[in-house]
Amino acid sequence: MKLVDLTIPLGVGTPPWPTYIPLELKYFKRLAPNGANGQVVTHSNHVGTHLDGEIHFYTPGKDIAELELDFLVNEGVIVDLSDAVGDYEVYTSKMVEERVEVKEGDILLIHTGYHHFGWDQPTADEIRYMVKHPGPDREFAEWAKKKKLRWLGVDCGSADHPMNTIIRDWMPRQAKEADKVFQKKYGKPLAEFYDDSKYQLMHIEMFPHGIIHAECIGGDIDLLLNQRATIGFFPWRFVDGEASIGRCVAFVEDDQYQELMKKKEGMKKTKFGDAINPDHVESLDKLSA
Image (cartoon, rainbow, N blue to C red; front, side, top):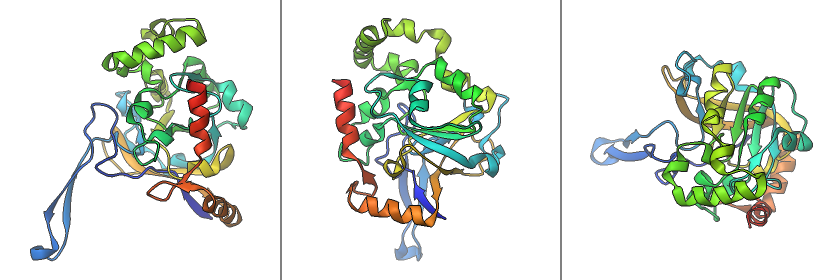
């Protein structure tokens, strides 16, 4: 089998979740005169592609070190919702099941298309990536529980809708934009649609059930949309870790990998060499207009 990388590049330019400490790097020794290069890295756990652990929001939950490899690697599916939801909109379980078959116990990766606004992309837009991406409502969370999903992944800043987090208070101008979208599309003000009883429900209501999630998925995800694969996330064996930076990959058969690489040859690339489908950005722009 071959591996397809679904991880975004990590460097000092990678934005953390808003207000979290970004990655900082400095040399403490150099080849001259020390004979080796050595670096010190400082960062929060919520920068780049990372896995939220249960204790991030659930005090008696598991830390990252307690997550078994059989949990982290399993069959799953990558669903493309970039044709269904744009800025500030809400995705549903029906949208997912219209596009892919989700089996009980699957890992589910959600491609909103907003990874195209990540820092590594030619269409980078940090505010759109962190503040305007779509997200779910409680209906989706209840469906995920019924499906007994192993874990979830999203290609944007949070598995929760950004306007169902503290971002709503931090970014009042964007909150006003979102409120107009909610009143027009859903017939309710933003504050009524996402009232206090739903606050960060994908974290607060899901982690006690062991359904955690990875955020800021990306890499070559555009190659695998609406396809099944064996999916794995590899965080540190991090004792007391509430979250962890890690590597997310899809395992595919050799012949499928060769087909994917041929497809990638004809696609545009990021400066780091990941495949880009510009149609997703065009679709999102139309949906958000």
